[in-house]
Structures are given as C-alpha cells and as structure tokens.
Length: 288
Image 1 (cartoon, rainbow, N blue to C red):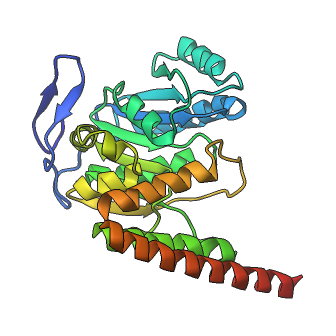
Image 2 (cartoon, helix red, strand yellow):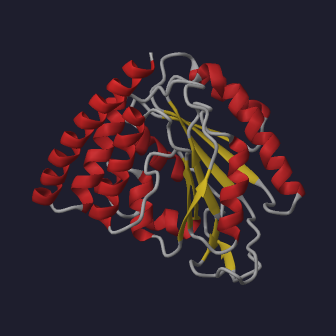
C-alpha cells in the first residue's frame, strides 16, 4: 500500500498501515486515500465554495502523485440554516463525498470524532469550513506527512493586534507546559494524521473527546511537525461560539494537567490576559 512499508485492508474495507513505516529522509509515502473530515455548523453559505476549492486542490495532488484518491466527510453538527440540504446535494453529485448528520449540536470536537468513524483513508485530515484557512495549504501538511510525520498541524501567522495575539501566545505556552508537547498554534483548524494515530486517538475514550483534537493527538504522536499556513482573518465568522471553543481549551488543560497546577496557571493566564487587553486598547487609542 505504501512505498515505505506494508499495509492492508480491514474487514470494513478501510485502509490500514502501521505507524513508523516511513522515516524522515527515507522513502516517501504515497497516500492511497486521503479522508478529510469537515465539521459543519450553519455553514450553508460557504459549503459549495469549500467543496469546489478542496476538489481543485485534491485533483492537483492526484496529478502530482501525492495521493491516489480522496474522501470528503461532511459532518452536520446540528445546523439550522439548511446546511444539511447543501451537504446532501454535494454528496449526490460527488462520489468522493459522504454526509453525516448528528441529531443535535454536540460541538466541534464530538463532530470531528463522529466523522472519524466514517473515514476510509490511510491518512485523515481535519479542516474547518469557515474558509479562513486556505485548502491549498493541505499540500504543505501532506508534504511533511509523506516524509514520515504521523501528525502535522497548521500554524497561522501572528495577529498584528497585540491585544488578540498575546492571549494566543500565552495559551500555547501554557498548553505546552501542561502537556509536555511544543505548541505554536493549538487553535488552528487544519490537521493531518495517519490512520493508526487516528484509531489510537478514537479509542482513548470519551474524556479525550471533550479536549482539543490537536492536543490529544500530539500527546500520542511519535513524530509531530507544525507547518505554517495562510490565514484570512475575518473571511468568515466561525459558527462555533467562542465560549464553546474556550471550554474545549479549558477541558484540555484539565485533562492533561494536574488540577491544582492548572488552576494556578489559569489564574496567571487570566491576569496576563487582562494586562494584554489593557495594553492592546491603549495602543489602539494611541494610533487613532
């Protein structure tokens, strides 16, 4: 199946391979089937464009020999704007697409795990549907993945507004301290991993499903690489609330850190966050 090792197909027809097959500097992995999980919450207005742009990128990857096929798994996480109707139309017109509809809005992370259960690829990606991230950057993540990285995550450029950037830097530092993994951008919505890592992640239990996917995967990965991606801030507003995303982040801290230590660090983080907001506001006023 892969140039760098042996693989097979499980009883459900899903591609299988063993972690550690390819090492950096060794044979380049050819991805037989790339599955992309796309959690959807009220994204009806952007879904057609997301599908078109992804299809263009994936056709290019097939032409270059990086992948041999792909699968798009759209997961409707309780949308109320007609997103499911759009997904059904996309699935009806594209043999590469699969639609999954959840009974209600469970949240972004549970939606991703629901999508994992419907993937068939030997490599699995996760991508947001708000179009702030460029689908073309999947090629950059795939390049690192093909050279032996079992987990590749995106890193967005830093925000020019210090009031918005400082909390992100502080949180990445805090998460790195808690987990023992180096994080430059925990919140980036573009991730690529091999199927073996995804399967290991999926079997970690419901506790991990309430934490952030990137954090949980990085804790299990043997070879994690972070790759710079483009970011169009404000291109489309995410339908997942800031509260829900912040709750995921706190649960990740609580899951992987010692409760008392996490409480102390969170208090320090909130203090620094308040200071950063004051500084950011002062800078903004000085420039106006």
